[in-house]
Length: 638
Image (cartoon, rainbow, N blue to C red):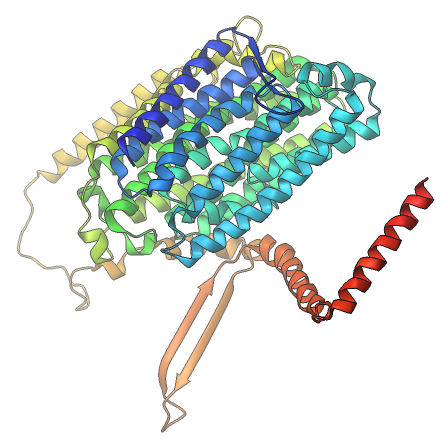
């Protein structure tokens, strides 16, 4: 990345971080630029809800800019698109009107598509990922455009204050229609199943700094849209809105982490993990909306605060994990965990920083993901006191989903860290790996500091989260007083003391192991090993073998595919010359939902070729038929 592009991107991130922190501190400002955009102009309106997403985006953009400056493998186009993309990520939450929001949203989609296609000349898979991403993101934009246009038409205005004022006068049917269209658009952007098909492709094939930005910031904006329009502007709604969101979030959480467990591609594993974490956030947002619909706004504030806390934590640890994965790819050129190993000794700083991110992802103390998921569980458990059949059935299922995803997440990152960084190298690329440049490590270090700060002092976000949930129509619940204190969400022990206790225990264990290792041992005596000799890299666990027990447990959900082809010896059919075994775990939703649609569209396209015969008379007939049909429609409508 060029020095100018890196400096500009870092400046954008710093400005976004400062503006977001100011808004979280109680600042609120509005700016109108009527000359910048025809018809509606540009309107920016920043409050605490905007500030949270602006601050998270700005912090990640700043760290990734430092990381990209030392990464080196970035095209000239990406160097100049990246600052603009970072600016749009910061500005989307600041939009204060329908036209401004649509403009910034589309600029974000176009900028991210250009960045995803940055290496399309090198690999065909990049072009395929770009097509999937372009189609699904534009379908989401169509739903967004339809929902916002309908909302603005019904409200008689397009600024957010006008929409907010008119929402109470809309009928339940119209409000439900608007919310359904917007929910489709926003969940698609967040990679929620079944609209997630673009996510593993785009994250895997895009340049590594771009993957970090998309996973840690762009997916957050789908959650922002749901909170802003669903809770703030529409004022909440029927319980079925939020039950549907919780259902989608639960399916995405379990489905995403199962595919992460099966993946051997490191970036694909992290991509499916993002789908899982966004599913958990959506469960919290849906629970908050459900509690608000039932009239318990204090509990709604608790659930929303938990979801937003986990979202901020996810931005920190997932940005760090993707940057660490990029450091591995930069050093080895390999993403396949089955071909890695031994990186702890060759890339010790990257290994340590990956461990920090993985600890946050598994949601165990002292990782920064612990506080958000624990608070989310507490909000769901306390929600059982809310009367109603829906809460009595849905909330226990949500708790079970979170517990299951947390357990599977631990297995996923033990696999990623253990197979990728420990054991012996399984390829020449891993054996010859070298540590990344200082700028790359500095960018990851900034994200690791953010993870550490969020893990040790989550209570620092309490007042800010109270202001955010107030904007969303809920009551403060986590800033102290009668609410829950974030610094004691672990059940009376502060995360700082938990971290210190675990650190001391780890140091004591290491000292004990070293002491035992110093005891005199017999040398020169070989143990009986059946003639096998010293273990080799081929004898160690791979990512595929590590995931095989989980695959057996969930085989009815994952539907793995196996194929054995045997090539016999030409002279003697009873002897085999070659046996080839292929095993893969396809994305079942993609296989059952998208592939039939694509096949039908391809068949329709082939059939439509018959209409293009090259005859000018036939084309004139098409035009005449179209004109007559239009006149008939107008006549009937008149």
